[in-house]
Length: 181
Image: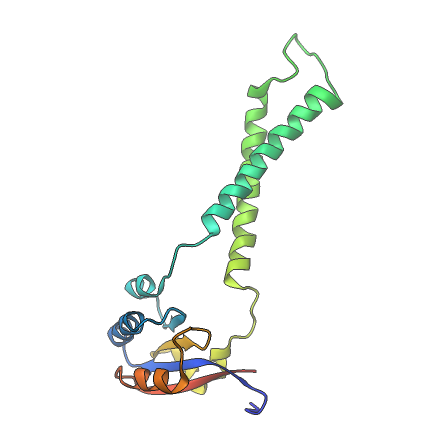
């Protein structure tokens, strides 16, 4: 990688075990860093709770998508049956809402599901085929038996020298600068 054109993306520390990376993540959080992530060969539930920040906007997006689908599905049926093609069959009223329940429910689920998938992609920044941590040579060990903690340069507390020294003091095996192409 040509370092002249590379942009600093953060600092990454490597740890030997899950307990060490968990303790390091707690220390990073306690120190005041907010933009950091961990990479492990298998899921560590407690680590997820330490890293998780404020709540997600996805539930609100899914609710609004479902609400839009519900209102849209009902409105479409109402417009068709009352205004566009009114047919009085069997003496029932034109706005026979009990007949609209199943299609309205289906539209609610459809729009909520589509919103969930698209919202997940948008909030996760996907598709993202290349991540800056892939530029660190030792990061390939994350799929085997090593654990990594990455503090992003976008963190307001980030200072290259201080952050690097802080991560070195957390019993890490190695600390690497992460550059983005």
